[in-house]
Length: 294
Image (cartoon, rainbow, N blue to C red; front, side):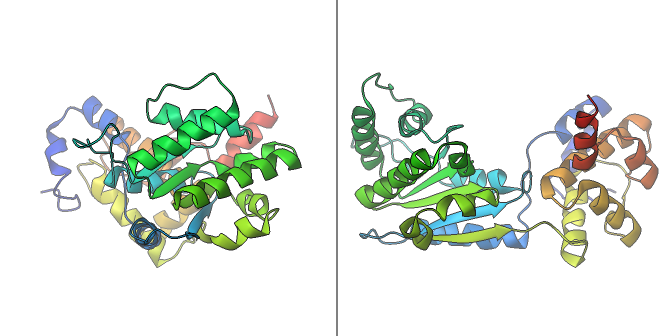
């Protein structure tokens, strides 16, 4: 029974329909090949010996194509630990988000806030000193900055100042920086040749409807608690899912979540073309078109 499901998911089949629907919306991680390649390179950065010029990385991809989930997965594998010998925790990997606009002071506040540190109301210089002291104290090796393309929301001077700050932190602390964002991020770092040269871009491409995508759908099917197999990897259904979700893993997940919920509530217990048509999911293009008419 339930041979189409991962062994870890079968236990949830005893839940009520409503409980299964609620469980479907929990965050999940699927370690597809490209993600595993990038995780390996992140591990390489973590174990890179400290030196004057540390290698860094940019993770580039379309919105909702798995960037944030990937880096959060990496950060969770290296969560902060108590340090019985010191005043600081031990945190070799630190995740934070870039502020909405390129503000050095705002970024320092974001770092301190993520560590539950008191945020000084003093000058940017005071915040910078506190951030350097704290990051050195907790032993950071890799600093991950999500939404780094936000740097483009400022003037050219603000952009340069923000990039200079990133370069300063890397040089001062001998740490690797991992910036995540859309393709605009490549344009953002291009304004500084030194920054551009030390960041290796790693691309999360839009998925094509090929063997790898059908394998991804098989992985999704194995963790969706439906009583019947859906055979999502079959050519016709896979092509339909790919076309509607427009080739990103985040949209594929949203579509399959909606379709699974519909399959449970309707009693169908498998994802069919009709279920996909009636589950209420709107593609990114449909959402954009709808917003333009409001």
